[in-house]
Length: 316
Image (cartoon, rainbow, N blue to C red; front, side, top):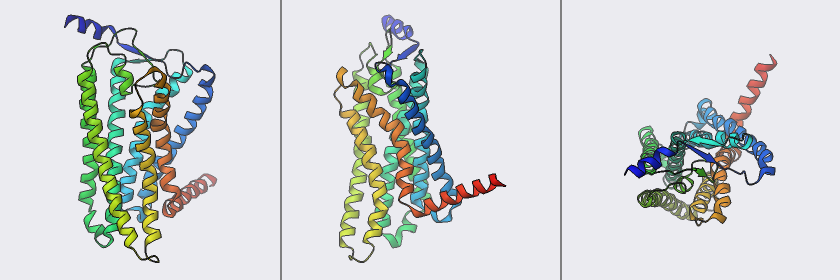
């Protein structure tokens, strides 16, 4: 016990290697990630503002989408500023408490987004399969409950996983071969038995990923059946168009998450883990507003109106 306490107290900061093995890529990576992060910080608040000012967007789908945009801002901001920092400074360190905080907020946001995408799939199921009862079924109370449930699930899972990590001992030199405190990267620098934490992570990953995918797939099975039964000249194109944006977002998000956690834990695959983490912490938050706004004329019209009003006010 005393030995474990000494080990744990021996590390107060971690060294993040980031992409230091590729020094010639540091500047291009910084510029690229800064550009993507800027688009994220403009596009996602744009979706939220567009919903606020356009009455046509005061429907459940855009209520969920505004929360998705909020989550994208949050979990991109958990990792990206630190990544940008270690690309330009030589002192690539993060405190033990800072590392745990980064993991907690990142984990909470990702799991919450997982469930939010499942909630949006259920919303599309009701809209396509029961259009006449849509407004009654997707009441304000139910929408608020589904969103609150998503946040609670994400927060609870993050608390449990962060607690199991905080109970581990971390030995010197405390070098993390990553740009942030991702789960497998933290586990790799632990010098105590991490089997309980890993089992907990496996159970939570299977339950969260499995349940969200099950809800999503079940919703889309019923949607496809309903669309097939529709008359050719009826609402087929409209029904399909309401789902394509969401399907695109789901495919990218779950595809990258599954890629990340299916990668074998070997040194040769560390670069793949880093790249996959960049994709879901930096790229996905930028893509979501583009995916949803580019396919929706109401969102595009609202954004155009907002930009023109700002330009007009500046010209005056």
